[in-house]
Amino acid sequence: MKISDINTKTLPKDFVWGVATSSYQIEGGFESGDRGRCIWDDFCDQPGAISDGTRGGIGIDHIKRFKEDIGIMELMGIDSYRFSFSWPRVQKGGSSDFNLKGLEFYDSLIDSLLEKNITPNATLYHWDLPSELQAAGGWTNPKTTDLFGEYAAFLAKRFGDRIKFWAPINEPWCVTYLGNTIGHHAPGLRDLTATVKVAHQLVRAHALAAQAIKANSDGAKVGPVLNLADQVFTGEITPEIENDLNLVSGMVNNWWLQGMLNGKYPENVLDNFEKLTGIRPNEDEIPDTKYGRDWVGLNYYNAQIFQAGEGLEIFPGTKYLGGAWLGDEKTDIGWPWTPEGIRKTLHIINDFSPNIPIYVTENGACYNTNLDSNGHVYDSKREAYLARYINEVVKAKNEGVNLKGYYSWSLLDNFEWAFGYEMRFGMVHVNYENYARTLKQSGHEYSNLIKRHKNGS
Ligand code: BGC
Image (cartoon, rainbow, N blue to C red; front, top):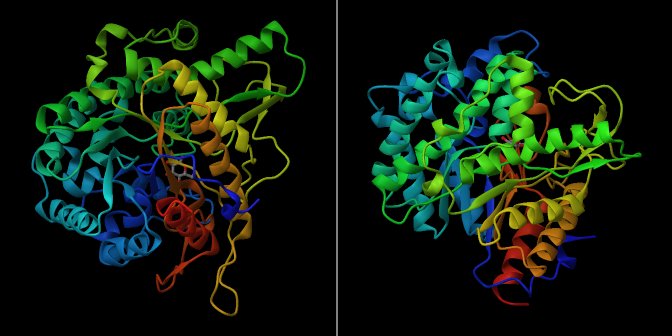
């Protein structure tokens, strides 16, 4: 299937087409100047932490080239740009004074977007925690949550006249489990007690930041951005397997949906956490959740496909599930194609909260296609992947899901966390020697889709 095969005529005129990035991945780390250090700067220092041995560095030189990047979005016809603020850039160390230079960078970014009629959708935390806060316990420490609330209040006051869409935290599941259970992400811990504490503090932080944003900016719309997924089992489902599947969906989906939207935790996850660590997070400590449920963002790449096997460390407490990244067709990073899963997962959210506006805030594919001899990038696999997934997204909308928009991950090739620069998700190719940008075939096709939808053809 091709992107040009997608019928967009059933989508409303105001359906939002976007692209997403994050601060550390495109701005880089402390080498990019005028900022404090963050946990990813420290993680990159650990031998073997980044598989290709690169570091965040200056990212893809976005700090200097942001106008060029916005120009590309304008050419593509992008309606909205989802980006994140770097906490250590706007507030070195994560507490006390704010950094004027950092704030001015985001002023220019936001103003330039608005000049081009591109709506900013801002995330406050896409994983670059100031190192000083990690030294004091990071997200296990309720003080970090309080400071996050202050940071949210400040940014809302400063930028709330121009930004209306806010997400406090990107993918709290990844922050919790990749960072603290298996140590694949910064801060690189393998500590179940930390895992449970972080899972609780992130729910608290979402609610607290939402309240702070609303108190400082009229008309702000705040929602969580979650990497929810559908769980699929390939064999016969015994009661033990069913229990484990419910536990996985509890840790991956319900903890965040119920916690962040309703201030309630799923009992099976609470029991599991208590069994594993002796800690049972207290729902009464979650601030009022009513400020942070104006919309839900879904980041979706693939289903979690299990077979019978030994429990996986990433899903602590499960005993009978193996697999998780099974599937036939896979992207270059090894993740399976499961297009129908994005539709199922959109229904999971819609069933949980029928009237809530939903955005796909990330979806995309890793293919490491390079320039050919004519300087073109024919990433036809990415185009085919996007075609299948976007088609399912349109189907979900036609089936009644309250879907308002779709953002592709990512606008640009960038620093892919523990894989460094070797894994490319961009619709725009970046040459890592001279930072030249080249729109790939997938980007051209996505742009054509947007233009086709806009003129109703
Ligand atoms: C993250 C991005 C990341 C992408 C691909 C998401 O989990 O939000 O930062 O690059 O997936 O791994």
